[in-house]
Length: 94
Image (tube, rainbow, N blue to C red; front, side, top):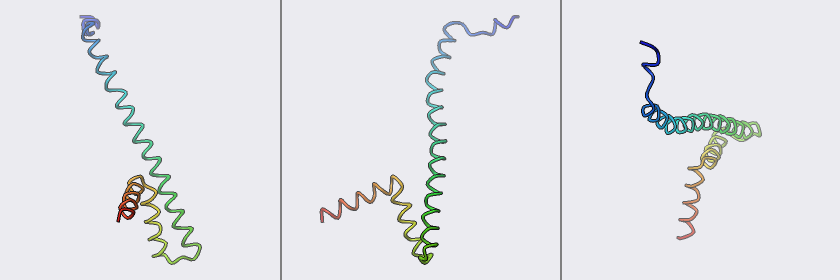
């Protein structure tokens, strides 16, 4: 029995290639998104920490700096921006 006896025929090979062509790009997109999200999360964390540290070093009480940092963090996220836009629109209609 040679190694060629275990090779897929043309139809099987075509099916394998179709599965690979459908699966690999999606997998690469997911991996890229995970890496990108991780990098963005790291940047966001550093930005928030720097914001808080700057406030405290400027003499602001820690509890006030914490509250402002929470507001900064929520407005810096996409969800926070959308929520604040929604509440602003709701206030305009009242």
